[in-house]
Length: 238
Image (cartoon, rainbow, N blue to C red; front, side):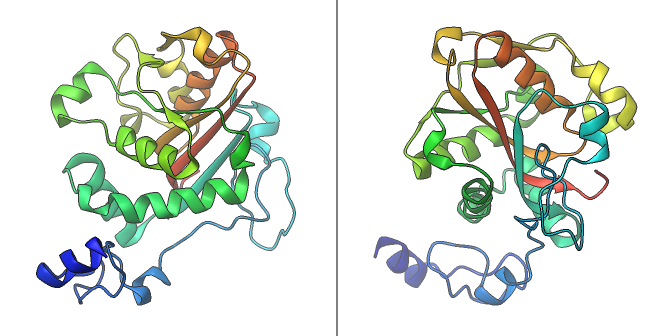
């Protein structure tokens, strides 16, 4: 009721088409929601979630077979392409936080499709470097993780996983250098909180999975039983 009242007083417009939004509390209208490039929930790699057209069954993709990531399973909601790419970049770098609830809708659906949500013990946001915190003034993954944890009725802990060192920005590197760039850059500050637990790490974009794999390595060294990864988007290059 509050959302409907606010929408009446301050009408929202769709982020994609600029027409009035017909969904309370959201910034995607019903028509544009149907055009969101959602990733399929079936016919994907059992580990990284990469989809293959025409394959209705789970499989192990060539990359995971050659160098299996440290996380046990990953889910991504949308393709990082076209207009959706620009919206996510706006959220990630320019504080377009009004898109949060729509994005968490997408993320929540992907998590429930790929995982046994009831098995998640704790939700962790992917931490950012000190430079990025100063540059952006916020960590977009924290907002996603907080909202998702609330939907799952689980605790979100922002103090468990931390970045250390000064790795180069992953987006500036070719795929074959990303794994080495993030190796050893994560630390677990509160190991007892993840020991024997199923941990869900939330990130914004999955490209090669190197960063998530490095985080999972640290979490498993600290005793995590399983590490699942959930990202808002997946790069079309991966």
